[in-house]
Image (cartoon, rainbow, N blue to C red; front, side, top):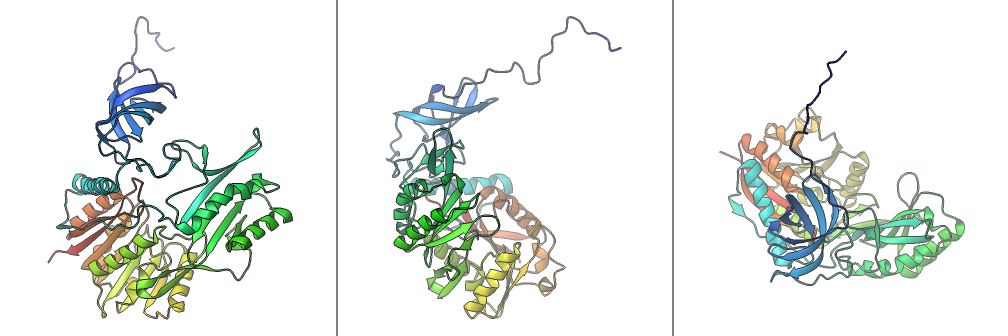
Length: 451
């Protein structure tokens, strides 16, 4: 039998547990600085507050959205003392919709904030600074987004359909009719979408909707149950009136309602057309995408006799322009369907010096037949997780130059440290303003092997 302890009082590690703040509680705060996600940081009642919609130096009244331990998530309800930098947001849904969280910050300060975030990550994680900082690549700060996913949810109690975007720090949907970051061609569709979907006989069958603008306009309806003939006719009629392709997705891949429908986008500076389908990854900002490709080609400077590798190649967004300047391009992607579509894009554009392969990019590539000959240069554009496994072996490819396009400064900094340890030096770096009005940071970095 265990010995019974008497008269002893135990206290959890870390001291007395503090009372949690109730959701909805309001608190007056002075914001000291900005976090990496663009929220203000304040300190009160022994807790650290992350306050959406605030700027450094402001005094605000914030509402608690959630609290855990000594961390509180909140949003600005009232600005009591505004920063001189604050501007009026362009969107009427700002503060409720979960997108475009830094609209209240002038665009030049958004760029400076993103630049500082990239520099801080490189210095803190890899203890490096590029030999040269490049000017930010920018486009229009509004009306830039050529693709949008619209949330749809049926409320059985209220018997109404919510159509819009996710609320900040919530699964709720903010009903939206206007979105100033969508390209002009998609604005009328966004305005008409709620009425269209609410007019369906069974709107609860709709899971979500996506809007696309490329070589044609397209509307994808993701449905969780079969659509009735009457509802399909409503969708067909709407798309016919608006000269929009209708795509449908139940189980399986998206399919065009009319088999002759096809989508694509052009890269005008290189006279290229890339075919794509709803569900394929593309850069949503066409203007910055072209500027990014142009800068990548300038920095990497492929020569006509060189063999270049493009990792995480997708549909060939970089590989096809690279092929126009290189002797040979080997492009690698993890998804077989994307590899097949990229190969078709190369064929349709008359490019014969680029080959596409499927490979697991989390595993060693040095044993693949196409990698044995080595490469003069490498371009990689990985997802948010970065490319650590690829980077660990990149020195074995023989590449003297490496261009890294990143959508996450933290993983770019981690992978930079590995490259530096292999003997590469960080020659240039800069941000790509792919998502204005958000705190999302994309970056480009050029590495060269030391002599």
